[in-house]
Length: 229
Image (cartoon, rainbow, N blue to C red):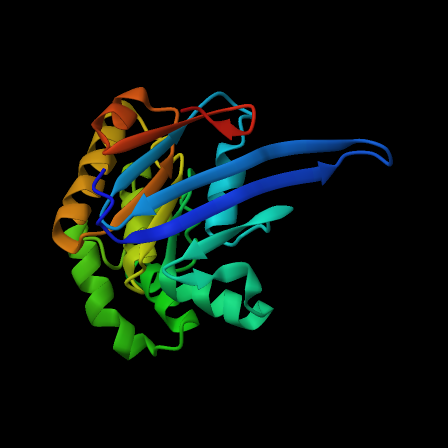
């Protein structure tokens, strides 16, 4: 990897422990040092319980480390106030999870617009970009369809469009193909590469999909809370 490229995320000495009883702590992360570069697609792989999702959630500020720091786009994020951190998360980071988490009572375009409205835009301001993104992910004819009227692959593509609506620096994805059949999984994988090409979008993806991991720029392998080198 060319070290002259811009570092978007740098983690230093991340640890995470959970108190499982009065006398016992479970250490999930045991000192994570890594860098994510702008425009990369990086996968994080490893067995269940290795700490992959915990690392992703801390990178995305959804959880806080016990020790260590996350420098995200030049900002030491865990030094921010709660309000500033929430604002940072909403505008700089896009999230995609295994289950699409779309709101069932809203259409595809409304689900995408909601993320922009949380960031302070009106529906009228958000709609043109939401339409553009849904068209980009192959759903230009499905704008008014509700999640129950979409296939699993289509719903996940709506979730990806929603993650992109605020032009985030990084999209963090936790098993984005884990709930899809082979055809839809392949379509989502290729869509991610298309979006990187068009927007120079950075992706960090936790996956058990070995085929997907082999396609990406780098793979970080985690075992027992550490990255194997």
